[in-house]
Image (cartoon, rainbow, N blue to C red; front, side, top):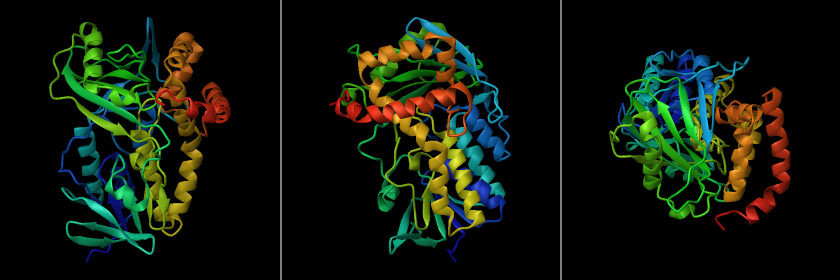
Length: 405
């Protein structure tokens, strides 16, 4: 009675994408979501052009979302407003789609495609001889040839299969709130790259204003664990300081709800094994340079489903190889770079370079938009390739002299 073709732990974008693609191919798939239908997820709500492309690959209409045409970057006294580039791979627009609405939209599409969804149900992998053979959920056991771990930031399920965060790699923390603003319909995201904490220490991270088109803006701040004094960083204070900076220019109202914080995993000790794969945040697919991961979640979930449909037995190994080829170099470069900007002096120097010229700002835009991977042509791809090689040589020194030591 509880035999399925595919089991998915987690009903966020990565899990929903997996289920949508698999169910449309005739796969019997069950999603286990520990929250209720319509639950919220703490997030910046921004969708990069890469995320839009992943949704288009799933034939998903993004009409309900608020269209975004570019990014406004602020570093000190320098402001650069850039349009998302037009490329052969990604559209020239992104979106803002509050996660309460976005996640519900996707999970409903999975249901429409034929997937079974069990809400308010936490599922944990069941192992037999080291292989995942199914899940335990709601007092029942479900079996399937493949289980997809899509439970977001690594938790109990990840510990069972060894997919925890690498303790030697950086991670991020972020906090967001919603506030009313007359500028809610703007078509540019805004990112302030030159934040400081209450002690005046530069923060490797950024503050954001993501207009939602519904009368509100998602306002938030994020920081990397490589920051000097990271363990003492007060996110609520940092958010309030940033809100004070943008209050006049955005005619910002009071927070509409209590600010909520979350952790951003940026690595994983394992992302596949016999009978299972991890997708999205559960696999550590988060860009260390902007905290974004929805696009990687959609892509990796879709890929996992496609490989399962092609051959369930070989899917885990091929999945690990393909996502490694697609994402690993860029994400590794980002993690190494995070050790550089954890040093206040190097962070200030890096910001001057990042927005100092139009050419440099264009590369920064590609990085902030997750538009770089192993197939990226042009200047951005070459720059990141050179950076990866240089940072590989500098990595031991960077780790020994990390700002938090």
